[in-house]
Image (cartoon, rainbow, N blue to C red; front, side):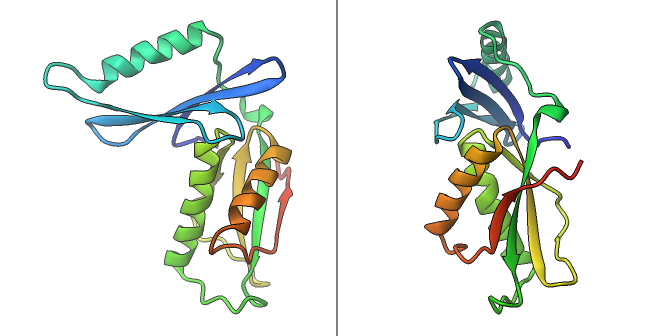
Length: 167
């Protein structure tokens, strides 16, 4: 599964650090970096009158790869699922509500370097379960971070969060 972000990781003394970027437009990119599982630093590179943000971005990429940051291989990721029971919670689920939930979860994962959500289509099983799947670098840590973030949000009525290796 391809990430909408370019994500690089570095293992240092049993801690994983992340560096990722997303091109926001033709004139800017956002960098997220820090220790996996924690909200790190966010930097925005923008075009200037006499220079493109891409030059600064490429220089940064060269520097961090020289310092040992590498991409994860597909088989190194794990998967976490978050389920919302639509029947028991009397949800009036629609694509807007689904988008809000997915956007919230995606922001948590990106801002902590844990990964990203996958599957863009609206996922609801016949039994009334809304399912959001996340591709992550550390399942236990992702579950802890997501449980805390969801508990303190308007999406606290999730049914369960669990590791799922559906490959």
